[in-house]
Length: 288
Image (cartoon, rainbow, N blue to C red; front, top):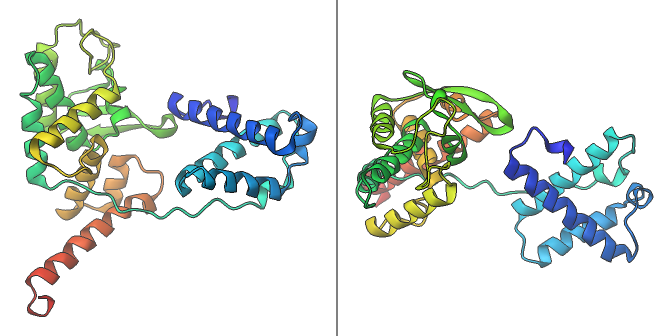
């Protein structure tokens, strides 16, 4: 959909799917063809019926809110084509989403995870790759999609040029241990390493798939008896939380994570506050 061209391919596919579901619902709800004229007469009762339909199907508030966002993007696109959006669209409110505090891993578990990743596969270069990608996720706080989208030319002497949400570019410093892990992997990797080729490769040489990294962490989670919250994205949470615990400035963490709004980064302060409360309750005489 042209209205979402600045989003990732994954997001565009989700928006398109949401819009198709919306139009299918209206076709059944109105019992007639969904024309441009019919869309211009959309009423708030239609949108409330849509949200009610989503909730009955077991959809949570976050998914309902995203689908409503997709519908708004669809009508924004129609407006750019000269079609006035229905007034009802400005009257309906998105469901409130309860913000959950991130669930990071403790530092000892992070060490175990990266160490175990380096010895689970038969091929040495796969072990080196697994160790490098997890070290990067934790050591630089990247989203898994950002890490796997990196090309060789995006890795400089001590920084990575990262393309984040909304195709925004940012420079992320690389710790020496991260650089060493990536360099060791690239030395062992059997496929040609050109500037425009992917940093992280699958078995046959194509770009490594996010699902493969998720399966890797799932296996490691079972082997190390880690909690279910141990996912590739938890490594990003761990990066931010451990920086905050050790005194890093919140706005610096915001820049490193590529958050557009400080309020998103402030979720990590809840994790720190919760840890402090637990410490007081555990060790203070009146807390026992």
